Image (cartoon, rainbow, N blue to C red; front, side):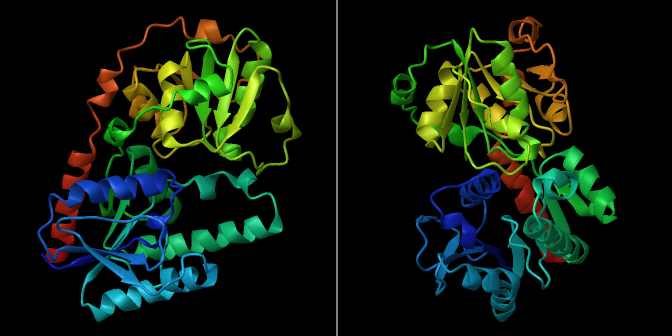
Length: 357
């Protein structure tokens, strides 16, 4: 198979998010699938994360990860030039979105395109349009587009007018959570009682629908609600800055702390207005937690009958006990459907197919 080079410039940051998680776990599994010389990942010389692979080659390039201008220049032009110099094929799993051709590009969702309220300043509006322009170029020029759900596949096809057969669904998974040891000190830190609080993970961006959690806390004072993630507001809705005695803003937490909170919560909450996949409920399920999620976008496709669903736009009469009174399937019904190993095998098969073209 012809060599592929993956742009890993953003994968060396210690703080990782959904798209980085997917890319890292796929690489972890690909390392035991690919043959030596078939896959290379390029990372900055001063990255905070170390990579140790058996079959994937790691190449450090002289880019200062803290220099945003240098990183942008690399992502937009330098990466493509590097791949060309190696007579290789290119792969982007982290939305670096180069201006020149990329053979396999991942577009995980259309949140930026669909959720306009996230762009609530002139700068953010211009950033949104610039992102859409880059995404359009990449989707049109790529030999294959990778996404993480059939919902996202349909959304990308409609929005960017691309034929569905060009888009390949590579599902996300949860097995990485097995490697994490829970840090129960976070339970005591916030004075929580096991099984008496609800937990939510994510930013306070518009599409995460933090408003629903605020209203749920107001209407269910017998329980405490814990929210982890950035506290910076990205919408102008002042209701999101509400202070309640039973609502805890935990800020950024480690994976170990998150796992402890998931393990001992009454239920995990994901009231999003839009998700391309939504890994956190899978992570919560792997600890034994039950989940309450939105009945919108990709979430019903991913979670089937194993969660309690809510209308994320219904902020009235939120009775959390009533929501949880319905019958749902065991977590294993969903967990058994998703595997990083199977997804990596599917990605490798796609790489082989593209290499033969």
